[in-house]
Length: 161
Image (tube, rainbow, N blue to C red; front, side, top):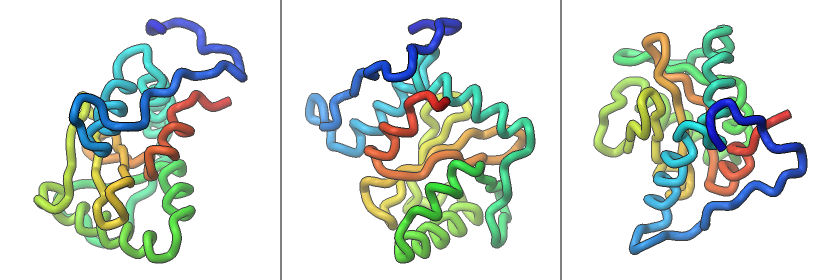
C-alpha cells in the first residue's frame, strides 16, 4: 500500500509477519524490527500513527502520576486501557518502571530505542521480555499509546473502525 491508498474493506485478511526470529535474530529483536517496518510510510502502524497524532493534538493524553523531573510523561487512553488489563503484579511493576523512566529515561536498565523520527519503543523486562511500550515524542513530551505483548500488537496494528 502507498500513502493515500484506501484501507482494505472490513474483513480483509491482513498478512501476518512471521512471529519468530529471522536470520539468527532473537525473538525480541525480530519484534522490534517488525514494529519499525510497520511504521514505514504506507504500512499499518504508520496509518495508526496519524490518528494517534490527532489524539495528541486534541489533548487526550494524561500525565503519569509521580515525579517527572527530566521529561514529560503522558499516555493516551489506549495505553491506560492496556495498562489496566495487566494483572495486579504486572501493574505494580509497570507503575514502578514508568515512574523510574519518567525520572530518568536514559537509565541503562530501561531500554529506550528511537525506531523512527518521534517513534520510541521501550522494552519492559520488569514485566517480561515479551512486553513493549510505544510512544510518540510530540509537544515536548512522550505520549505512550501502546503497551502489550507481540500478540497484543498484532491486534493493535490493524486499522480500527
